[in-house]
Image (cartoon, rainbow, N blue to C red):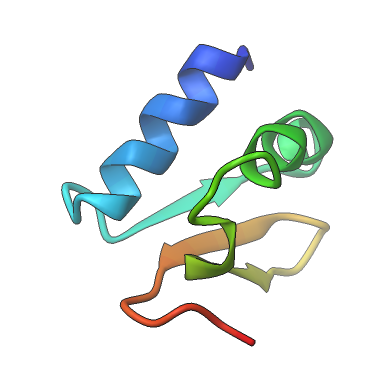
Length: 64
């Protein structure tokens, strides 16, 4: 997964074009490396799933 692909997914989450995105275990590190560089990083919530996958959602209010 490229940085551009990750940013496109994160932009879609932020704009509510998609409600959630499932990141598979083998893509997690690449995805997270791009995510933590964003200004709106704290608006994203990752929910751990069975098998090491993570479901990401966008929150209206930044988490603390």
